[in-house]
Amino acid sequence: MASKLCANCRKAASTRCSACLGAPRYNEGAGVDIDTFYCSSSCQKAHWNQHKQICKSLRSRKQLARATSILKDIVYCIFRHATRFRYASAHISDSVLHLRKEPRGTPEQPNTDDKDTFQLFSMPSDTDPLAAEAALVNQRSMEAIFYLFLWARELLLPAVGELCVEIEEYWVSIQKPKFVVKYTLGPGHVAEPDICRHWLYKLKLNNGEVWAFDPTGAEYGDPEPLCPWQEFESRTSAEIVHMETFGSAFFGNEQGQEESSSYSFVYFHVEQQNFQRLLTDKFMKEIRTEYGGKINNLLKGSDEAFEESKMKFLNDWDHNVQRAIGNFYSEREQAQMDERTRMCVARYVPDPDDELAEAYGREDYAAAMPNWMAAVDRVMSIPLPPQS
Ligand SMILES: [Zn+2]
Ligand SMILES: [Zn+2]
Image 1 (spheres, rainbow, N blue to C red):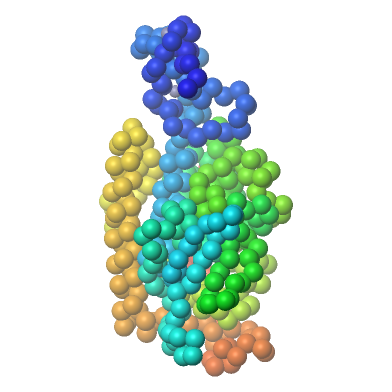
Image 2: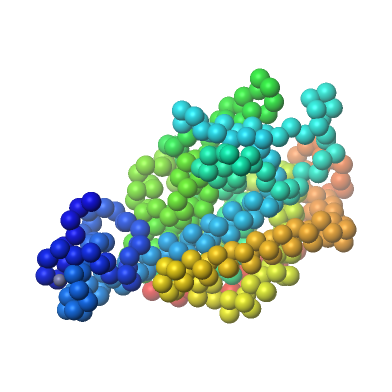
């Protein structure tokens, strides 16, 4: 351990300024003294005028780290309860993440009746935590952004809006993942690894720092949700595409149009929208009431106070996700979803090769679209933070 010197008198010191303690490192060597120690409270007081500025900047950074850790946990909580994938095992060896899917039915008699909808995420308890986390979010970056987008004005902005002067969305293709992913679908079958297509946020902090917020980086070996943008750019990606508008990943842009030209994506949208609507309309209200509509209240206070309120918030959130899933499977909700799906798919501009689309009528796709857009408009109408 390097010797710690009092920032004021340069004597040996062991007490750290607690206000900025725990701020993550940003572009090492940029002249920011992240480790500010004092030998006594009188030295700390004497040094305050010099430390004040940097302390404030580090506190912003610390608050951002707290916010992104909560946002990541919110997304993980949803995935843990509501995922389309079930894995029998996951392990990492030689920079390869091996995911083995749980079989449905038998090879002779595959269970095709199984509805491709939300199910609990299952994973053997002895799985390496990083492998479990990677499996949990594998190929879910799109959904993570989808959820965060839908709640961006409700959760992301209240959490980081005051801290950030700019929030942008990016599409990236990960060129140097810490591990590649291979699926095993059954005995003897190993799929080729996918390219890592990925969505994430670029956050410009009020102290001038620029950060990458990547809630599902664990899928390629980066479990930390926050990384200095410069570092992220240099080590992770070859191709980085700026999405036009914050919240544009799914609607009203070329990417979204292109994506929605498939039956499964239409279905996926309807399902996600229904689940999101349930969570927002029925259960978000409780979360909002409980936390005074200000998620950023959670981010204040000592480390202990923060950990305690974060734990409580996530328990409440977890509870609400489970209740929403319970509702999601209710007969009434299923009937509504079937109806919405039927309506959306009916209006779907078909790919002649898409057999599934053929099974539905397709006149009303255009009429169904406004329903989606209305939901999006409602979320989008909550104001953005002031731009400095
Ligand atoms: Zn001193
Ligand atoms: Zn400080």
